[in-house]
Image 1 (tube, rainbow, N blue to C red):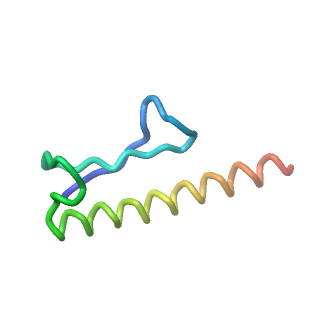
Image 2: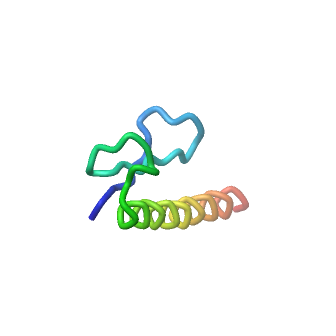
Length: 63
């Protein structure tokens, strides 16, 4: 496991997620290929999660 994802305590926009690597790096581009792949997978998973939240919210508002 190279990174984790969490909601921002002080989000710039609703649903703002943080992808945080366990190893300290200056930039995404300083990460190894494996670390970059793990972070991109978290981006995809986070998007799917947020899409599900948005769909749930929209369907509740329509009732």
